[in-house]
Image 1: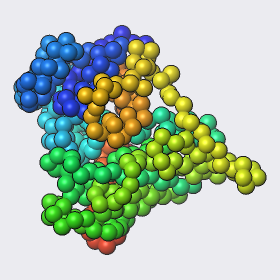
Image 2: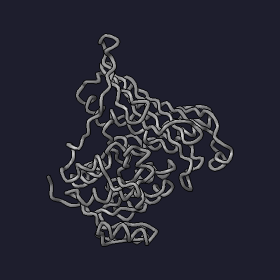
Image 3: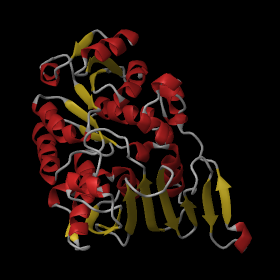
Image 4: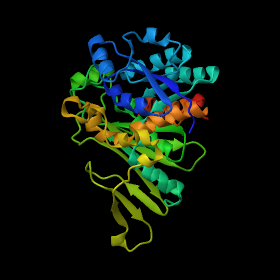
Length: 375
C-alpha cells in the first residue's frame, strides 16, 4: 500500500462526526481540520478527537493551503454551492447526498472537475452497504446470470426533521434508491418518467408546491436493454424506514426483506418451486478495507444512546458503508483514479431525482438526462 497521505477537512459535524475516527485511522489520510458554525460544539468535538485546526467559517477553511480535500456533510441546500466553492479553491471534494438541488449546480461541478482535474465523489451510502456489496459480488461472479430488472425504494417518515425537510418532493432526495440500481452494472440513466400518487397535508404542500405522498419513477438505461423502477415517500405514508434494493437475474434474483433486520431472499432458477427462495444473511465486507478501519463497518461514533444521530439509527447504520466510502475517496486520490461515483456519475444519479419530480408535475412526461451526465 502507498504511504502517501491526503490531508482532509470535515465540514458539518452532526452526521459528519461519524467520519472523524475513520479518517484518523485510515493509513493514507490525515484529518487535519474540522468546520462547524457552532463554536461550542466545534470545540467539544475537536477536543474529543484532538483536532488542532478548527473553523467556524467555511470560506476561511478553503484558504488553508494544507488542506487537500474536503468532506462536506452540511444540509442538502448547501451541497452544490459548497462543492463549487471548494473546487474553485483547488480542493478535492467528497460530499454527502445529494450532489446538488439543481441541474445547473450539477453541471457546474462536472465542468469544474474537468477544468481543474480535481476529484469529486458523492458519498452515497447504499452503494457501499454490505447488502449492495453482496449483490455486486454475485453479479461480478456471474451468479445472477443476465440482469433483467432492478428495483429500489426509500421510504421514511420525515415528520420532526428540521428546516428544509417538511414538504420536500420525494424524488428530490432519491439517491439512496437511484444510486444502487445504476451502480450495480455501472449503468447510466438516459431518460425518466415519474408519477406522483396521493396527497400530503396542506401545510406541507405549500413549502415546495409539491402535493405527492409517493413518487414512482421508471429509469431507462443508456445503451442497454435495462430499465429500473424506484419509489419514494417522505410524509403521510405508514411505513417502517426502508431503503430497499432488488435485482432480478436469469439465474438468481435477490429481494430485500419487507421488515428491517430480516434476511435477504435469494431466488434460484430451475429449482423445485418450494426450494427457489432462500433466506440469506448478507456477509460483512470489512475484508475489503485496511485493517485499521475494518471495525467501523459494525460500530461508529454514534453507538452510545446519548449520541445517536437520527439518520444513522433510522438508516440501520447505513449498512456498514462509512469506512468503505472513506477508503474509496482516499484511495482514489492516492492512486490518481476516479472514484465511484465520480462527478458525472453523481450528476446522473442526482439529476434522475430532480428531473423525475419535474416529470411527475408534467403527468409522467418522459424527460431525458442532460448530456453532461454521460461518460
